[in-house]
Image (cartoon, rainbow over all chains, first blue to last red; front, side):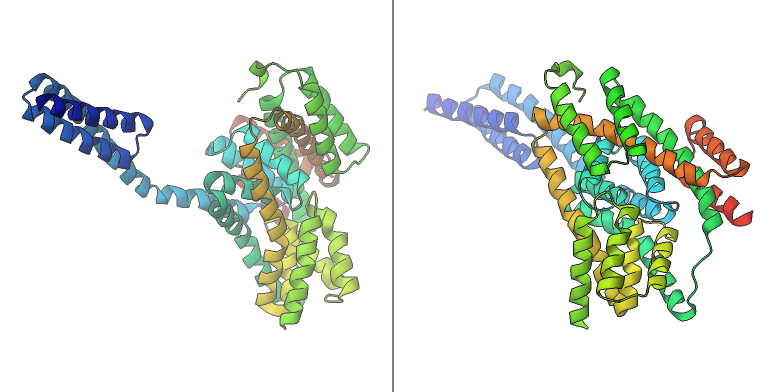
Length: 262
Length: 172
């Protein structure tokens, strides 16, 4: 009889251990606690104080873990505000991205990579690759890409909408004014100054990104080639990025893994 | 009304699908559809639409909002904006998901590695070509130098640099 109960208790304990080893989320923690509790009761019944004490210790550890989990979950709920801040960032960039697509590009790099560290330089450039190869404005593509990375489809929808909203609203207001008075703002001069600022911003972002990506002469070669074919030969962006990718397949083909910095 | 909205949506879905590279590149495409094919806008109105698209902070593609508004009011604006965004939106999401899935694939990783560097080249190219058209006097050259110093040395948020340059342009 005693033997049977002991076996059963051992079994319960082992099952708990398995569940515990497999995953550590809330549900399995509860299951483990339940199983071990039963095992503990059985050990007590047959008077095996040593085993019971051992189990008590494990249970204390388990409850501690559970408590931490609950607290963590509460903190996550509190982070809705944090999330709101993330979406607000896209709104902010949507509001201040005056001066053409490259201005927005700089703002995004600054906020996403430097300020908030949501993306690494590598991720950011990957978003830009997608934006260049696929249709649509590159900046909006990066926003969608980041949103998708953060929270899948819902993230992509929210970030894109929030990003486009300011200019959408502003455009509607301008269109209404245009309909009534047929005026357009005279902004040529402002744009010259904005262009100058964007030039500075773009060059520094370019330098920053090259610092992150340049590792040896091969990268330098691709960079110079891409730069020259855009500036001198006026090749299409899609062609340049695509070709560089193909070149990448060839020249990194027998690269050792250690150079693939994750 | 619904007919026009459908046409509007169709035109901008098409434009959204073929606007590779984005930005100014697609303007002739839009002009062909909106001015020549459908006659929704006159030539001057279209030029104004593009100008306004550059004035607003977002991508130039927001000109679609203006065109939609001219054709069908607020509803038209919403329809055209959503249509122009939708194709690239869906493609980006699918591509991001695919990249995540095939992250371990060596060929894709190497392709991205090469392409990433080309993008940096594009960034420099954009800097040069924007600079060529906007560096016209001492003032603009000063703005470039100041903005580089601000961003590199003092790590100031670029929003302030853009706003500051805009104010300088308005005042002087």
